[in-house]
Structure formats: C-alpha cells, structure tokens
Length: 236
Length: 236
DNA sequence: CAGGTAGTTTGCGATAGCGCAAAACGGGCC
DNA sequence: GGCCCGTTTTGCGCTATCGCAAACTACCTG
Picture 1 (cartoon, rainbow over the protein chains, first blue to last red):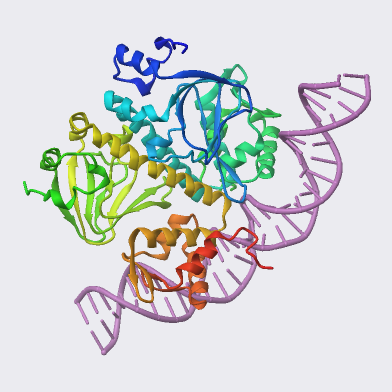
Picture 2 (cartoon, protein in one colour):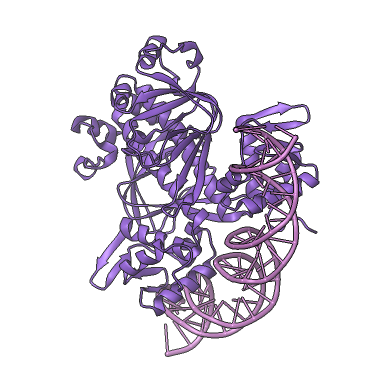
C-alpha cells in the first residue's frame, strides 16, 4: 500500500490534536486513488464502503430525487472529507460524488471508522466540528431559499464558491473548477435559464466575465451589494 | 443541585454506550429548569453558555435574518439535545430557542463539554450521529424546497411533525403542541396566507381538521399521496 | 359577559420565475 | 478546416405564489 506523506495532511482540521505517530497509524489504513474529471466516486444509494479525504481537485456532491431532479449539496475542496455516511449511521451514500476536475483522494474503509475514533477520539470531535459547521451552512442555505429571491441567492452562491475555491486574478476572482449554469441552478433552487439570464445581466454590467463552465467575478464588491440588498431591490 | 434520575434518560441515543456510573457523573454536572410556554430559552446571537437536553415539552428553534424574517429550523422533541453551539465551534447561538409548551430541560454549561467528551468519547460519537442525521434532514429539506411546490412541502412538513410528535386519536393524528399557520409557513418557505389556503382546501376535503394552533391529520394516508405526487399533480 | 387581541380566512391584483422551444455559440475532434 | 455536440442564450406565454387589505373568529382578560 502506497504510503502517504503525513506532512501533506497534518495541518488539516480533521487531524487537529492528533500526534504525528497517531496520524501515521491513521494514514496507514488509507489508500489513495485518482479520479479523472467527470468520473463518479460513489453513487447515491450505493453501499457506503469507504469514506474520503480530498487531496487535490474538486468534487461535487449531489442529491437526486426519485423523479430525477438534482440539487448540488456542496462542492468539496481539497482538505475536506466526504462520503461520511457512517457519521450519520447510514449504510448507503445519501448523495452522489463526482470529480469535476482530475482529483486525488485518500480512501478509508468505512469499517475502520469505529476503531479509528475509538483509538483517536479527537477524530470524532474534529468530525463533529466539521459536520456541525456544514449543518450550520445548510440552515443558512434554507434561510436564503426561504427569504431571498433568485438573484440574491445566485450572488451568495458565487461569492461562497469564490471564497472557497477562488483563484485571484488581477482582473477579478475566478472559480477554479468547471461549473455550468445548470450547476449553479442546482445550488440555488432555480433553473439554468434563470441563472443564464442573471449572469447575462451581470456580464453586461461588467460584474462578471463568464463563459462555458467558467466564471470570473470582476467586481466581487458589487456582487456583495447585490447579495445583501433587501427584497425591494432598492429600485427607487 | 437537584439530582436527576438516571433511569429517565439512560435509554436516550445521546447516552448509548455510556455506563450507569458515567451517566451518573455526567448528570451531576447538569441542572434542570422549567420554561413556561412561550418563554425564550436562548436568543440567536447570545453567548452560548449552555447546552440543553429536552425532557418534557416542545421547543422551537428558529433563525432570524437581519431584516427580521424567520424560519423554523426544527421542533425539538423530548429526548433531543439543542443549543449545541460548541459542536460547531461557535461561541454564540445560531438560532433562537423558545418553549412552545411548558417544558423541562437539563442544562449543562458549555464549558463542561470538552471535559465530558474527553472523559466519555461515546458522547462525541453519539452527538456526531445526531448532528449527522440533522444534516441529512437539512439536505432533504433543501431538496424539497428546490423541487417541490408549496402544497407538497406543507404535506411533508405536517407528516414529519405527526411522526415526530403526533398523538394518535381514533379520528386521526393530532400534532400535540401548538403550531400556527405562520409556523408552518416558516418551516416550508412560504407565507401564512398560502398555508391557510392550503389547509382550508384540505379541510373541505376532509383531510385535516384544524383550528387555532391546532392540527389533526384525519387522512394521513391521503396526505402522503399529496406529498409524493410529482409536479404535474396527476390532474389527468 | 363585553372587549380586545392574536390568529385565521379570503379576495384580488401583481409578478417573479418557470417551462417550452428554438436559435446561437464555442470547442474539441477527426 | 469543417462538423458535431453540449452549453448557453433568448423570446414568450403562463401560473403558482406572493403581497396587501379587510373581514372574521376564537380565545383570554378584566
């Protein structure tokens, strides 16, 4: 089994408070794998045999309804865990994970989890922290969907993506993985048509520069204003 | 400090895998308190000095926007924990908790949490489990808000409430705490007007019986059908 | 038992955003 | 260099749902 360099992951929140020796032991149970762009890592409903830590690339977690509609649960950035079905006591994955870019992950067998948290309680505490944070973010998303209109939600979503995975350019911030109008629609609870109209509007105002699966925020500051303005839109 | 009877709480998921002696020690750190109907337990943004376990009654957790709109995050049923701000590393409560019925809670100082999970790692694991489940439910809620129309969302919400806190009557299932149209609107991302119209409709079809802050599902089965039908409404 | 208050119902526009359809576009592949 | 396919744009009508306003009702209080 290929050995993973501890120094690459030691600083991650997941391993906070874990001694180097312990980390070494933890990593010994993992293997690494590479997933090419657009390949599925696991499918919703499949048996949750593994959990993952993303090292490089970007992964989209999406949930599908019985009727086929999808929502994007989140985009996973390097350093984050995903596929933690066991954390909720589930035996099947509640969502589908797909690499949106060539990605490298660490993989542990789900069966190792009980033993790991037993030996290294900090793991459970750290995971609780991150899951708690995600719960918080979920609530924020629900709040937005309940109280804001589509344009504001799209603004918020893009700003979040920029913060999480933005590459700074001199003429703005680029979201550094491929993302379509459809994806944004599925993050904000709208349709790709509406997203397209909104982005077209922004583009003609010089707020963004966007193309095929590519978005650059040219005026993040002005987009923040859009995101925060209250429902009346300040149209006066 | 009033001693809490361990037998009342020993069976809760939170304390799974905790020995009676340990439970005893854990409970020694808690005090209990009673909150009368409609009293606030903590306010969003306040310093998170305590976390809670609900023993009797019902508690509504709600999040408020800067502009004053609210959403109901969840209704807490007896046996559930709430106010776990420390679980996400927050020092302030992210929501407001209010007793919707006369309620009794156990209260631990937030400061005790690190020590508790250190001494009893099962607590962290159990909490991770419940937080994970809530995250899952949140995602389901987002999925519903994204893909379903209001009537279906209301149907789902009521069915969930009935499952969680339904009192079985011979002529249906009553949600056994006071809940207003406004509350339901805040759970489903709509307005109290729309909820009122929907419930009026259902009432005239004999699906529910409802009054001031009171709802009885007379035909849960038919409401399930409403909740599950796809968007075209089967109007053929 | 009258009065007041909070919750509920209902009517009537107004509209944000959807859904469908079709055209335009862009990029990679052969 | 031309072709093909997935993505994006855009037009247009439609409607679910909102927002406001007003009437109504049940319960609690004094």
